[in-house]
Image 1 (cartoon, one colour):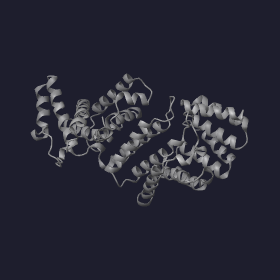
Image 2 (cartoon, one colour; image 1 turned 45 degrees about the horizontal axis):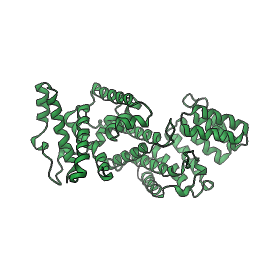
Image 3 (cartoon, rainbow, N blue to C red; image 1 turned 90 degrees about the vertical axis):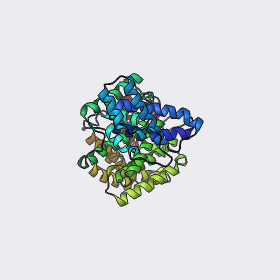
Length: 411
């Protein structure tokens, strides 16, 4: 299938699913119908050409599948009649070119909110978002998170059942709840990106299918809510981070830390777009945590060399970020910036405070940062022990290899 057709189908899939779930309410049945329509399109469109109204074509074909499915299972007459009545006769005919029916409006945002429903666990939110909105297959999601396909299938199925049991309606949350729910949506997209950029386990450092999906979905969300500063900030953060990916590993897949990367390999197009986005967000909207993280990433990306990084500005930005969203990861990064500005012992003092936080105790990143600062301070023996502890704690093979190499180099 041509890449252009595949890209179009992935873009339209959540819109079509949203339309059907709004109309018929039954998530499982609607998703199956959409998958069948997408399969039909993947066969017919490369052969016959993309229709003038591709979304209308998919909605029409999927709606027919829903009705066929109800009838084929000999559902109760009342249910069959309800589904049939809810579909106007003209909606079973592909719309004319340029015709944009109200029933075919873009429901992607509503679908995102549904997939990130508060009744679901974080793992279920991730999986369902990738399946229903991202268009990834169950096998692809299972592969990304290193679990058996059957396990992931059960997780997605349980998520749909839980949404149904919760009585959630296919509509945007009430105005009073929308901001909190949007934060959940953004957090899920952020987690998807992070898992793709630094896989928590397995032999590969990156999972490009996840970073690509996270960026694509965040772009779609920004198109729906173009004035939201935190969506701008999140997209900027993703782009500025993704720009460094070509330089993060060598030819053998070994991790290269930021200070040692060949900045000539960084994607300048993504950096320019990210800087433009975060500049617009910071100058036109209320400041939020994703904007601040993006601003920090921009300072790193705009430095010609590691030595020319404006660490005082980064430290100042982390101070503001800690005031907006104080969490141990922010304080861990703040400790690194403090060490770069005021010396490694100042950073190590902050790490001692963090070690008492149950959320960070035993985390490999705390040990890895401690090792780095001890190395900066000239304590090779202490750095070796901390590097080895970090290597023992991480579940990422590329990170483990890197940490073990650092320990061996100092031994």
